[in-house]
Amino acid sequence: MPTVRAERELLAPLDDVWTFLSDPYTLPRWWPRLAGVQPDRRGLAPGARWVIQGENRPSLLRRPEAVGALIVRAVEPRRRLAFHLTGDRLDVELVLSEVRPDRTRAALQVEGPLLVGLSPRLPRQALGTLHGLLQTAAP
Image (cartoon, rainbow, N blue to C red; front, side, top):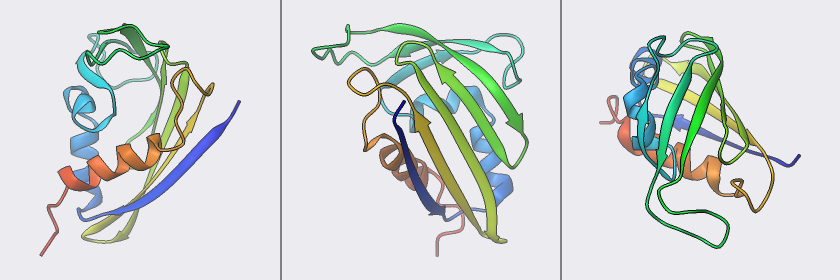
């Protein structure tokens, strides 16, 4: 399956980035085409299944307000988060690393079928939104 990647330096300390990402309810704020999430009782833990709500923007291949699931695959606090989106059939991996005490590098890899959920712009768009939300170390 095709894979697309992007990398971005975030203007925030690693702890701030992880605190934001580890809250399931922030996912729709930075992940494209998501309107809502309902995590299961395990929260951000391997094997957790979350119900996700897509935004109401139908396309040729997508129903409006699609409901699907997110399955958390791996969690390494302050380092790595991996999940699978069932509706779009996407495997997502986000790797974080500290550049400086006030900067974090985020590398996002997304694998999945083209024309269903994978767009070459998807990782750049997600990281761009994340960058805009996490400006805690900006001057």
